[in-house]
Length: 239
Image (tube, rainbow, N blue to C red; front, side, top):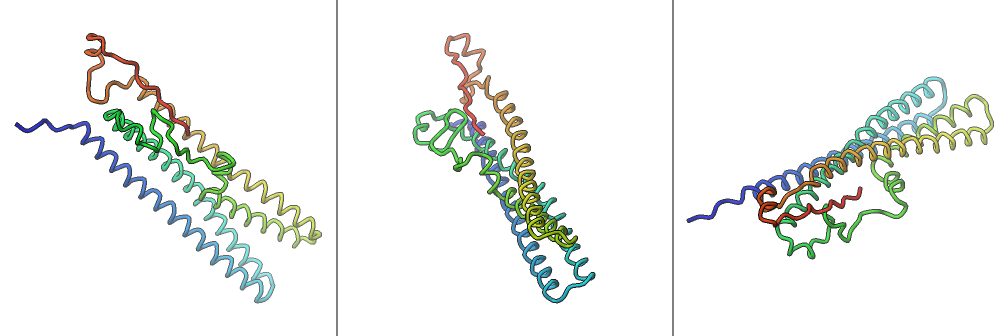
């Protein structure tokens, strides 16, 4: 007689494969948008440089200003979208770790051989670069786009101040202040959205796992009657 199919394991493996493919698709979209932004920015810089070197004038100034405004607007929209891609990737990562945790709980003898973190074990690899989360967000895809946006805005500010007849040192100072302020504002937005995502994910994980029963399918009520009930594993999830 054939054995009954393990429905829970089948569903878990199907969910794991779905999450893996969805995470890959999300990462591909994020990378494609980032590359598109770099291509557009490089092309706009080349066109603006050709216009400036080709001769000054009101028409040239207006064309360069228009190109810069369009690139900056595009950069802001892609930056916001890129932050959402980052948060979605974080959610996929936690969802995958949750499925892996279920699989390890089903076969606890494999726990010592699972190196990557699960919800029950911090594992060996933490994935935290030197400098903490601020540096990680500053050098990520979203942070890089924010830095380019800030540089464009700082350049426009410096040129505008210089065009008004101010001294070059004042123009440089104004540009540097705008660069620092813009970069800080971009990183703050990334951190703000990241903290909100962390809070939402942590709340969901803790709520769903704090009363988790036996992964093999034992009814907690039956386990309490025969004295085999145990405390639910403590969830160790670190953003």
